[in-house]
Image (cartoon, one colour):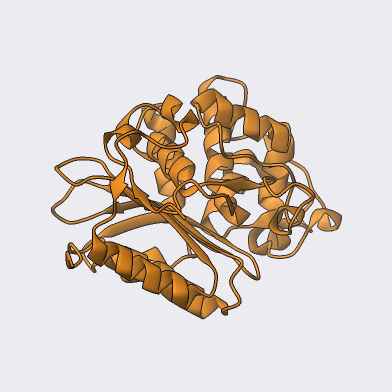
Length: 295
């Protein structure tokens, strides 16, 4: 199993996602590797992490960074970004209304459930906001269909240079194992690099990027994951994903006196309950507060 530390290559453009590993990978410091191994054991499954410092002298590091993990609802960060990309290109309006009825509702749709009987549908903007704030599954399906479906979202990711992340099915099927183990998956490295481009870099124009971050800051999910392990004076903006055996948290952490950190943390195939998995993801964030012991 390779738990490499990726150095400068991860801060280069998104096209470098096509590389499986950079030639300057080096081993993780023993103290950090020991802590990550402990988190993985407690998780009851497989842990994957990628951390991208965006300034200063800190180096990126990863644990199972190139392994594939299910996306679950973390794909909604990518979906909302694609919608904003289409808005920026004049091909979509956030004010466009998408009709739906109660027959369209699926499990975990708190916002669309409250609007289903009104008959007016919801705007693309409101649906995207619901998708990121509450992880509303019906809202995600409606926006995904408007954008052309899973294949269109995957094509958008390829246009960004992400050759790894893929979406193959809608909610809720995407949360279940598929005929192809690559369906509906990403890697920590790919997801972190794409999130960096979309949330901090040049993946979206500035107005759309600002809107994406506003939507994400309104999230009511993930309070027990990376956010719970961050210092109290840090800002944390992430998108979660969850299934019966998987837990994910992806986004940006802003330390009080350091440049932002982009983090993608995944747990898959876990036999532990959700609270244990949440605590393990919080422990990943705790690793970022201070350097771990070297030995």
